[in-house]
Image (cartoon, rainbow, N blue to C red; front, side, top):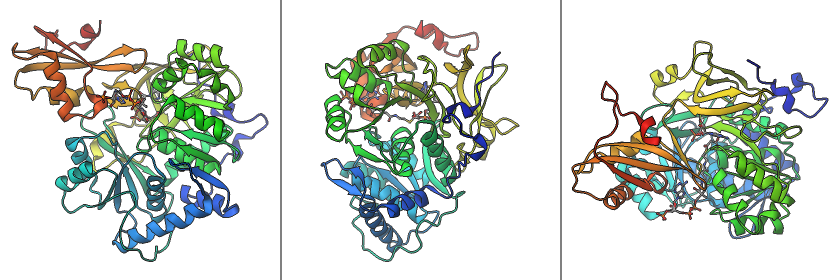
Length: 498
Ligand code: MLC
Ligand code: AMP
């Protein structure tokens, strides 16, 4: 078996790997502030109504919001839940939290009452910043002691106290994910973890202050937040925030603002590739895809119609970014490339599971020592739950998942969670949820229901719609007489997919 090329292959020719410092000389907020101080008038962020915010303006706004957090009694280590569509107010609240040493819990805006309640009860935030009255009410219902405000953080002001002094080992973000099993767990990422990953990306993708990103990914998952936003601010670059992905909005912003970068999930690239404006992607310096597999034929279609050799990379909530195709050199469709700077990667010799170690790998799951312990091997490598193999050139191909997971449009859906909800339907005897391959969504959530005959697929779909975030709802519902089972009575999902 060939081994993965060393991460130094990502560095510009002539760079000595021993000079790479993934500590970035401090925490992310310290790095951001250093950039803003160096040139306070430089444009950093274009908000969703078309106004540019400079580093100086962001420094002032974030200090002011941090002052409100302090006046509300929040101090280092306290947690703040953030659930909002992309806006400069959300960015300001997020950066203010990190500057003040507060830990952010990002929450998907598609969550329903139960999904949100789980985060509130498990993550125990003291404050929630929410951009929707109904979601705000769900947070209050889950725990009336949580203070809930809008994205304007309309609280009395006060002195912000010491800012940007959180130590590198302090928790910065708690990302909820089901990992390999069970109910969503909070992956605790420190300032150092987040900083190490963006520094690796800055080096590998040649991210410079001249770059401008069209940022149309939501800011509540690692791709939009930990890569798009954090990376932009750390590189001293700029970004154009788009509230909701649309082909025209992305390409108009790229043209009007002379953007150089676009990051997206494969569903976004599918929509771009099938648009009559696909050729406009050619103006960008770099297009990156991740969060789900980018089909090799979509890669080829984009390469031939636009000239863009989309750079695919691989990451996850617990680790931020792990592996990337190289900026210089060959980008191999169907692979995710070679380990990023600092990442030590190996494959489990028996299962082929991808095992990783590095300064980017999280500190553990919140309040779950057992789940944390079992997710690392004896040598401290994190078990990703993804199965890989190395191709002839040593590039990583992701070939299967040990964890039960469906990825629809770049969002993760855990079959178990959907099954638990559908089983509550009185006419459903048992159910199995799988992913059906789909050219636009990658996979679509599919439910196979053993019923007592008194229900239609449409009724099951609407039952799910009342209880689950939109991207988790089964788009295909099959009624079956009996689910296939093995000798132990366990449903054999492989037969359903076939
Ligand atoms: C929206 N819908 C989805 C969906 N997103 N259904 C299935 N899967 C999804 N991902 C629903 C809508 O609610 C709507 O339902 C219907 O589908 C059609 O909506 P649309 O207008 O076509 O969808 P749109 O709003 O354009 O959303 C598509 C999308 C979005 C691709 C822009 O899903 C998205 O932003 N995905 C990015 C996910 C992401 O950031 N992942 C990063 C995870 S981090 P109805 O019922 O109203 O018709 C990670 C680590 C890493 O994984 O490596 O990056
Ligand atoms: P999450 O836990 O939401 O961060 O999702 C992480 C998972 O997304 C990984 O464990 C992979 O299964 C998947 N993933 C991320 N990037 C890619 C990619 N480029 N190709 C295939 N799967 C990916």
